[in-house]
Length: 246
Ligand SMILES: Nc1ncnc2c1ncn2[C@@H]1O[C@H](COP(=O)(O)OP(=O)(O)OP(=O)(O)O)[C@@H](O)[C@H]1O
Ligand SMILES: [Mg+2]
Image (spheres, rainbow, N blue to C red):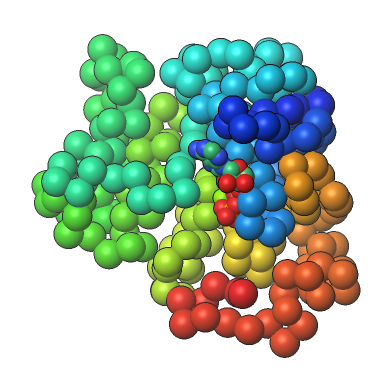
């Protein structure tokens, strides 16, 4: 579905991604894990065109998407939900969701129909649509971010740290949303610091280190791997109050 082929990319001060190779299977949910600064977010940004690969190629199916403008990559069917809260707090929930259709803003009938579908999938849209997004809880905001990403019916959704800052109840909502995306045939690539949560909602896992893929396996395989437990699950799995594994 998405193929990363020898990708080098970074921010001017040198390459963060150092010849990264990976193939994301269609219909899979893949979780990328790795230490801080490994380049996990950079992988997502390279796919969505926010960082242009200096070398190598990224393909969506048969089509090369590396080098395209971010808006063209969205149109090709790849959307990213960023790591930090990306809602406009002063705009309404409805306006925030509709922003997801911006690149096809002239297609008002399609956008309206799609909005109505999403309001069924995410009841919070119907309940709080006319309120400022800033009024919502962290978990509710995450739902709105997902809905916005789904406005253009993408083929691939990229989620950067969807669990960040959420309480267990909100985590359950995120987990359910990821399951819904998968059931609807979407391919999902997510990055998680909360390794147990991330692999728990995924079919496949990728371990990154220093801009390269160290290991790939099924999510269950990685969770059962004693080296992974040692590295990321802390053996006794120390937990912070927000549920993140440290
Ligand atoms: N906008 C930027 N400009 C310059 N350097 C950046 C930028 N964003 C990230 N970097 C650097 O690139 C490297 C990889 O960052 P990246 O955000 O991809 O890591 P990450 O694996 O997502 O880490 P984290 O777990 O902390 O989110 C880091 O050394 C970081 O400091
Ligand atoms: Mg990151």
